[in-house]
Length: 96
Image 1 (cartoon, rainbow, N blue to C red):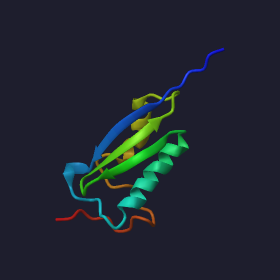
Image 2: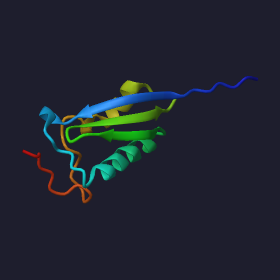
Image 3: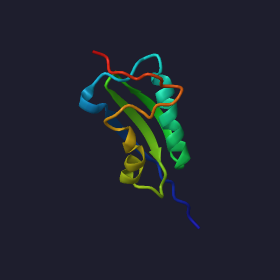
């Protein structure tokens, strides 16, 4: 019986609310790792991440049993606002 191979790579971009400069270089890598952990939790993987002070680019491999809207809905609480406050991201304030 034949096998099928599925590789669903998606480029996802999130921006901060009002394009405020929330993302600080001092914890940007930890933020990427946090998002990568969310993706791993739903059996996806982050291949690359980057961005600037006001947006994030994610290259993700999406599980064949999920749709892109499923993944976005799981990640969407991050969209438009800083990540939930927890020890790696204390005292988030937009840069002026």
